[in-house]
Length: 112
Image (cartoon, rainbow, N blue to C red; front, side, top):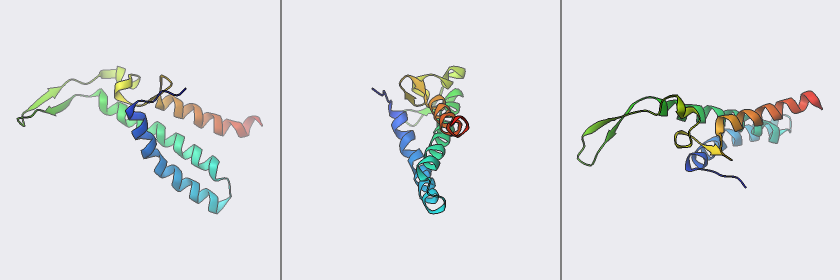
């Protein structure tokens, strides 16, 4: 059973765009479209998740109903692993899942 949070669903929808483009290009070029879509999607998942988590580290500004701005304290270095600051699949951060998938797809050619 996979456990997703809302950030994961949003990230996977965003990553589907470059993965679909890589699938089309891979199909036209050498026919190994699934491998290129998997690699592109996994690398983009790493980048999107890291960018979301880096944005959660720093302080921000929040606006209330009256239009007044109030400073909001950032999550700090824990944002790199906390579920609220990025996506999680099976209680693992998406950057870690993307890294494992990328390594697995690329290393498959080395060990076969």
